[in-house]
Image (cartoon, rainbow, N blue to C red; front, top):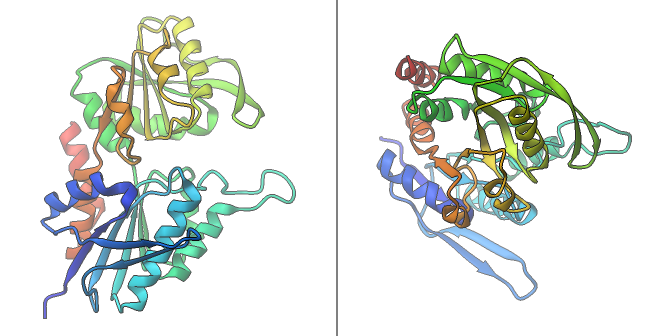
Length: 320
């Protein structure tokens, strides 16, 4: 008997879910949502999922707690409806930055979210650019951590420019190296030397590497308030960079995009659609690359029980 596959999109990820639906040729099944007077919600499938392989496209961005709770409730409903497998495609993993105890008495919320997803009934996670790859170890179920650099590099490669890739801090050096190698083995990297002086506050101490006369690409996984990466852009421009393009997988922009649009140090901001924000369309400096093809190929590989590594090889061959 052929296995039945069912695709859902949470309310916060419907645009991406619709694109994936068209690509993988799976209709998007509707989610019924009821909101009670006290704010409680009830979510359930409008169709049977018994003995089905279920895929849920979701994100846990702002409002983080509300989106996480709704996802957990929906996963629980599918488990109790006898779904065979429940694969959660988390385009953005909320609380990923709380992945360790930096000080005494702090929680490790990234581990807590992993526990909650498993207890709710998720049997597999497909994540996109986890803030720290070690978060994979918080799960006791299979997890694919898709690298957004592959999608972003493909877009940058089409621009046919000569680049220097810049990491906004020492911790992002590996990410910068991956992107530089995808663009070309001859692409140099530079690193912003900074220190953290408070919550969402940093101080730039200097620049390691040369960017003078270069088209600089500052790469990060998350842009939240934007203060740190704007300081990095200023540092790079003041060190002689010809142009500055900021590249990130997850664009939260919790303080809005205006500061980037109005910055004399930023020429372009390139992000993916891991977080849906319709309001960004009105800005001229933003460019959004879709994760649809990448995630769709991974879903198809999951259904066919084939290798995800082959998908990465395909991306690399396209970039050559």
